[in-house]
Image (tube, rainbow, N blue to C red; front, side, top):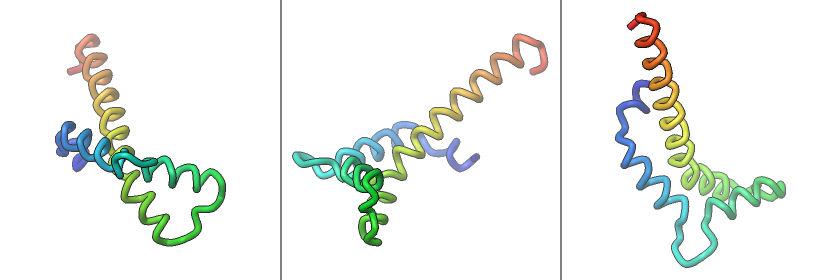
Length: 84
């Protein structure tokens, strides 16, 4: 988890948005692959790789934001109780 803490938030945000909406002007690959996954048609290895490629940075962004929130709440709770 320390590796995720070391990645700057803005980099994850740029990569998540950039790959999340790629290609511009067309139906985003991430939405297309998620709908294929929901329909049960995500069977080709290239499609699975594409889902991984376009989905990894949004997942990392959510994990980092959740971790930042949890660490912030934990720190505030400890400082209120005098445990810090």
